[in-house]
Length: 393
Image 1 (cartoon, one colour):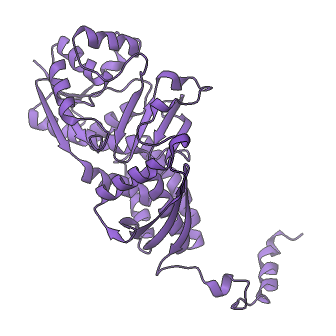
Image 2 (cartoon, rainbow, N blue to C red; image 1 turned 135 degrees about the vertical axis):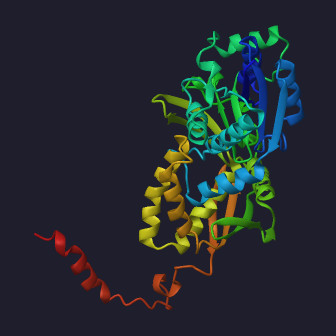
Image 3 (cartoon, rainbow, N blue to C red; image 1 turned 120 degrees about the vertical axis):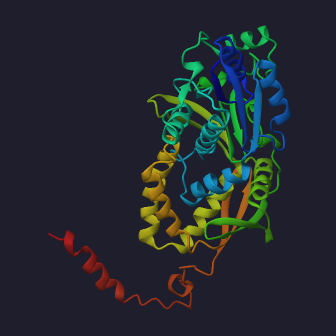
């Protein structure tokens, strides 16, 4: 009997896949990566294990990868200001290469013949899993049941799960496909596929709607050291605790929601909604601090790098040579990104209202229009003549 290691989420697709692969004659070993989905109101990892066994898995591995995920994936993306198409903070995309890395490792440990995933043929995650696995071990077979099995809809999968008494958390009335980790939540399918319809409140998990938000503004200060967040309001804490706190604070004020029609890697457009309160707050704060300490040319060029970096992450090319080279550039820009940013959270918005850094390039005596002004305005005439000289006819 062939062995296969399945990236198991506990959702509808992967639960059906366990049973389906068993019917194809495979022994299934499930791998559950804890990237933070078990925190707060997230999923119960123990229940996920029982679900996998009930579906037919012979063994289930659960590994806490939260620290590695944050330190080696989320923080590099934060330093790079990587946001796909201006809205998506890449939570799911960042988690896939890490999960694929451990899928390969577990396949080696269990002497498995293949690895499998629950991605569809029209999604991005299939690329992220398979490209990563192919880089790390090109000899491993990759199985993608959703691309070949007989089910034509999520409704049919729900009936299949009921037939074999597989416990699932999805219903026909709420058939969302959800991927969650500590960096954010991706939500698709169901009524969200109707582009004219506003996302219903029951689709959101950790952010409050405008009608339920706190009526008062929340102020907080985040301290960074070389691009890495270290403190909230002067108190040091681990990255995991810091992000968790920001998810709670931001979620309570409706920060971090996005509703976008995005360009998928396979060439189609899709509508997804995202929640990422903590990541949103950190991206805004980090970008504001960079505006204070990076010179104009580095800052402007980094915008170009950020765009490409986000594409590489989205496209599943985390382990590519170009992404590695960009990491070196990004890291070199972070040496002076130390300081604090004060933020105001109110009714879904997050704006910077204060900035300070020992590496600040802002000189009040040059910028002010008050009596402290030391800018020699007489120099402007010569500067303008030189600047405009190439364009005169």
